[in-house]
Image 1 (cartoon, rainbow, N blue to C red):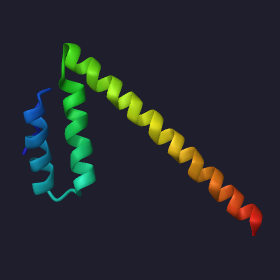
Image 2 (spheres, rainbow, N blue to C red; image 1 turned 30 degrees about the horizontal axis):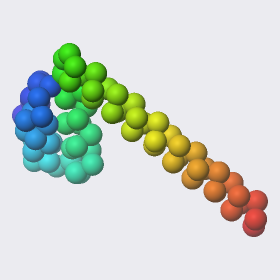
Image 3 (cartoon, rainbow, N blue to C red; image 1 turned 90 degrees about the vertical axis):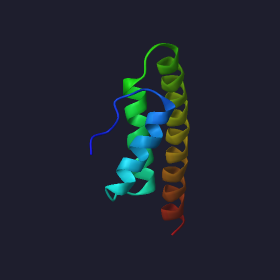
Length: 78
């Protein structure tokens, strides 16, 4: 079943349900649904979604760096 090509919040729910029915995990389904919303939204809604996504990705990168650093120190201690 094709995904709903809309930037509305309601389309996220429809797309999530569609992906779950096709057998994808919860995390993948949410990511796909939100990605569709971000790519198909317009105007101020798109700007808000892009800003939140950039903020999320910046936080994820910081967490990823700390994990790498902790693994390096664990290896050095051994």
